[in-house]
Structures are given as structure tokens and as C-alpha cells.
Amino acid sequence: MDAARTPVIVGTGQINDRPADPADGLDSLGLMEAALHRADADAGGGWLTALDTLSTVDQISCPELTGIAPALAARLGATPARAETTAMPHGDSPIRLLNQAANRIAGGEATVCAVVGAEALRTAAKRAAAEGKRPGDILRGSPKRKINPYRRAFGLVAPTDMYPLYENACRHAWGQTLAEGQQETGAIWSRLAATAAATDSAWLRNGATAEEITTPSPANRPIAHPYTKLMVANASVNQGAGFLVTSLAEARRRGIPDDRLVFVGAGAGADEPYELLSRPNFTASPSMAAVLTATLARNGLATSDLAHVELYSCFPVVPKLARRILGWPADRPASVFGGLTFGGAPVANYMSHAVACMTDLLRGTDARGLLYANGGIVTTNHAIVLSGAPLDVTLPLDPDVQAAADATRADAPALDEDHAGPVTVESWTVFYDRDARPTRGVVVARTPQGARTLAEVPPTDTALIAALTDGSLDPVGQPGTITLEDDRRRFRL
Image 1 (cartoon, rainbow, N blue to C red):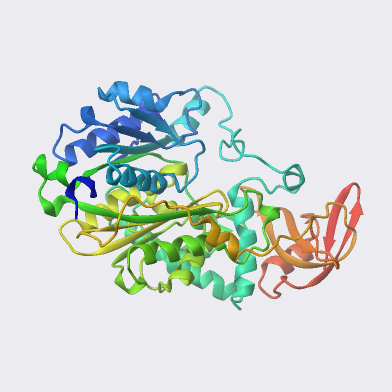
Image 2: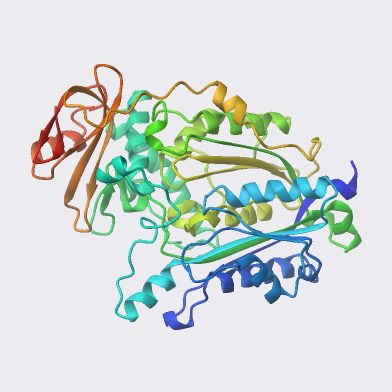
């Protein structure tokens, strides 16, 4: 092992900002600065002015902030040769940046790298309200999100609109009833809540039972069938987190004890087609499978070798898919931080918190942990292994496993935006307003020719809304009809 080319994490820092007065709240840049100062202190101090690379995760809560990486470097008194920000706020960004930092150190391109991100969505919303402005839904209206006009017409815009299509299709593919699918969600999510309750840096620490999570109530309103508020990412937070990566030789030169070091293993990354409607189905992610399989193989590990995992948990179907690929039991925790509902969902930077928590767990042990993240709608996937003891891996290693993912991906169906007549249900969801009233059902269907098409169910069709949501019927595979009524494409069983 070449100590000068062996990447290790030496410091982590996290911050939750809960100002009594929104005017006193930190913005995203301030949260990043605070997180890195905490990471520096965690590593013994004196690292920030020695940074070769400063990598920041794109943020959306403060759009007026531009040039964040160089601005942050100036605040830190750092003069890194590379100061960069990810192009998009995708949830896999911290793991992708960690992999890049490890490869740069292993390749002799850098000695000290920092990765950091933050969001202040809660403060931004409260400030807007205090100024008499409508806070708006920045997650739904992000100018960086490309939206197919056809999909937009049916309300399939934000992750909360589209992940239910995967959930409902997967549940059918796995042979589960609605009750069985919700039971699995409750089992996984209640453990996320328990992890958050025991984690100082988590945002929501009151815990929640499986029944509380799966039962709609005034405090747990339905969002999009079958998801309730306690099943979806909680972006109304002010959180920042970052970490420092250096070489084993540099860490020892600075006197960092070995039991404070966490070794960075090999990672892997791959993407799904960006457009949801251009995917072959909603029952699998070839990219997720390729990434998780390759990450284990590249580190010479089996799932049984892992003491801890972080399986990205923006919506229940994601860790459900990931745990099936890994063979990770539903009765073992899927997070070291608490998940995006309870730990908190600072948009693209959740995984920086997971890295920090995984580092805490691995220090002074010989245990291994796997971190899996995704961005978009299972769109961008990245995973990596961390270990309390050296790993038998050779870095740098290109994380790209796109070819392996593409080799297993079937062709996508054609899209027929104008079909009227008989169809078969591929997946569906129902949207709700803040008073728990259905606002629209959306059906993804296949035509007799195999093309994909969309239709809606108006909230006035209470019988069909009930049939889609009460569990008495599994709509997937059911025949139906699309008709054009008042320029709207209506679906009926």
C-alpha cells in the first residue's frame, strides 16, 4: 500500500440551523462555511488553507448566490487549484465528488480535498412569507429541471409525482398487495425514524412507528398514492455537511491517529435515461443494479461483509429496489443518518450527512459500509465503500459502469401522445391537495401496439379514484379505455 496514494477521510462536519427569527438564518453559503470549519476542527485544524480541491454540491434555496465555490474558498482563506460546483442538484453528487477526490489523491493530482453542500430552504421560505411573498415550490419549479411538455400536462413534474409510478409498478412485479407494500415501507421507514432519533445531526428526532408512517392522518396527509408525508423527502430544512479527504501519508504526517481515519474504497456510477417516459419500464433500474453490483465486486466484498449501508431513501421504492439487488434484509437499518424524511433532505446534499455519520461509525473499527445514492428519478446512480481498515483495492479507478447498465436495459416503448381507445394499465398514481382531497389521477398505459400513453382520472370520478387507491384491485395489467373529453384524455377501467 502506497500511503501517499491511499485516500482517507480525516474530518467531517454537520450543521442544523434553526433560527428563531428567519432574518438570523444562514444562507447556503454560510451553512457550507460552518460545516467545513467543523470538519476542519474534527480533523485537528489547519486543513482548510491547504486545500488542493474544493468541491461544492449545487444548491437551489438561494438562487441569488453564484460562484459559490470560489466565494467559499475566499471565506475559508483557501486557494485551491480547483474550485468546482456540480452542474445539477442531483442526490448522488456527494458520493460522486467523494469518488473523484479519492481518485485524485490516488492519482497524485491532489493531497487535500474538501466536499461540502448545504440548503436553507426552510429559512428561504420563511423569509419570503415574512416579506408577504408566496414562498413557491422551488423543488417543483426549478429552472434547471427539463420537463417533457406532454408529461407536464398530466402533472408529472416533481419527484413526488413520478416515484409513485415506480412504487405501484414494482409492487405488482413483486407480487405484493397494497397492504403488503405499505407494510414493507413501514418496516423500513420506522427504522429510519429510529436511526434519526439516535442521531444528533438528524432534523426530526421524535421517531415514528410503522403504523404512524403508513396511516393517513391530519399530521400525515397523503401526497401521491401510495405515499404519505412521512414517506417522502423532507426538504424543509436548513442543513449543511462536508468532509475532508487526504492521503494516508499526509494524515500521518499531521499526526492524525489511525483510529480516526476511514479508508475510501472503489466506487461506481451509471445513469438511467433522463426522460421518465423513455425508459423500458418502471419495475427496475439497470443502472442501480450495475452500480451496486460493481461497487461490491470492485472492493472484493459480498453483502454479508457490510456492517452498515446507506440506501438512498428519498421515496420508499428506492431502498426497496436497492435492498433486493444487494440482498439486504428489510429488518436491518437502511441508513446511518435517518433517511431523507427524518434525517433531513437538503436537496442534493443528503449524502454528505450520510458520509459523516458512516465515518463516525467506522472509526476505530475494521468494519465496512456501503453508501448508495441517486438523483432525479433513479436517474443518476453512484455508490462507494468506506472502511475502518485498509481495503484491498487499487485506485484510481474510473467509476463509469454505464456500458454494463446499458447492456441489460431493454428498449423503451414508443410514445403515443394521441391514442384513444383500449389500453392496459402500466402504472398510476393519484395526487392530493393539502386537505387530503384527490386532485387528479394519472395513468400510464400501453396501447394494443405496445406504445406508452398517458391519461387522467378527474377527482369527480370518485368510484374510480377509490378503485385505484383502496387496495381492492391491483390496477396494473387491468384493461381500460382512453377517451377524449373536453380536450382532456380521460381513463376508465
